[in-house]
Image 1: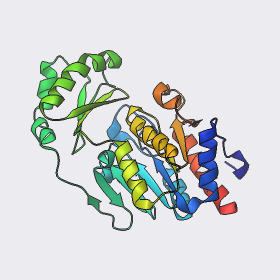
Image 2 (image 1 turned 90 degrees about the vertical axis):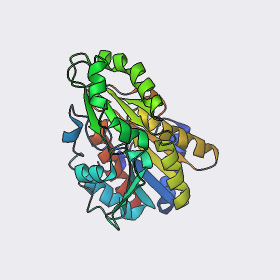
Image 3 (image 1 turned 45 degrees about the horizontal axis):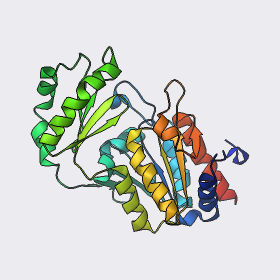
Image 4 (image 1 turned 30 degrees about the vertical axis):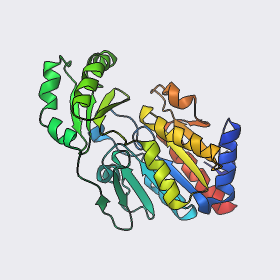
Length: 281
């Protein structure tokens, strides 16, 4: 993508956010979700890998802005591994919706102990799903500080998700947890943890003067809401929706975004264009 190809947001607030980022990159925090944003959605999340040019694009951006942040529901160390981010200087990864923190300076993950509800459910959840009539193909991903029930492999994944939604909500509540829905996944995790809270805390820590957030799924709504709230407080922001070909965009994300790009390839191209534009300003 050439410098002249930098896409323009469709909203006034988004254009203001982009202008602020370009005018004062030293005050900008650029934040990216992982799955569906930097990495294509795949049937088996354990096989997900970031777009092959993602690490290089983030590395080009990092020295030109205040911070480049990856904010994901995955464990931080796993996101670093799957993204090939270990050698991206200046990168921060907040995993588990902000509970875990990794940075390139230390290459270490800092995090509190897992919630007792997660510890209690970990050995029981697969058996509970069998008893609840979960269709074949339903499986559990252990995220360390959360447990995700995936239905993408089931013969009728949407129906399987709806079948489990209410019973899982009750099970989670019994263990002091909440259920966060996503693309053919229901994630059981502790309350009070979301991308909005994590993003807001990081921006305040950095004293950010502008923010970009790129995401694709329901778990990103809290971050979108945080950016919208910050706009009202005078911090310009740009909201980006990643919508890959062959994967329907999540309406709640696409409708609120200032800019929609074609999946991880589009996100990487945007990151490159921003780095080029900042370097050439």
